Image (tube, rainbow, N blue to C red):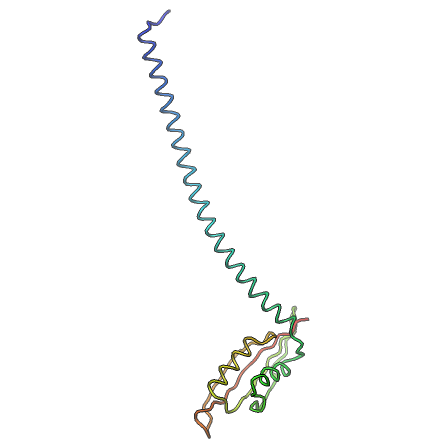
Length: 168
């Protein structure tokens, strides 16, 4: 059976158009899924960039603390207090240094001490906090109590609880 030539051309054109529409729909679906995947990957990339920055910041902080551990030739909290207070000229104003406790840890030894300092100015107190924070050892402030001196109200009496960590 032979199809007349006029109808065959129309059926062929319809089949070509139908095939083109099917291919276009499949292409649009693929494009949509790829666009969605691209958005997800970009969001993951931004999250990874934030995590990378946070990791680098933490690694820098850990490196600074590790460097402090390695630089410290100080043997205990008493020597650390003496070194810090001597460096800013407050050694003679330290009235008492009392060791509170000594804890053995897996990474080293932690010693805590209470230090009572008399008659320091506000500027000297700020300089002391700066020196403790930037000391070449792991020395941290646990607690601070500040009171006015009785004989000279512009001066302060301080009670500090300091913690010293010595690595093994």
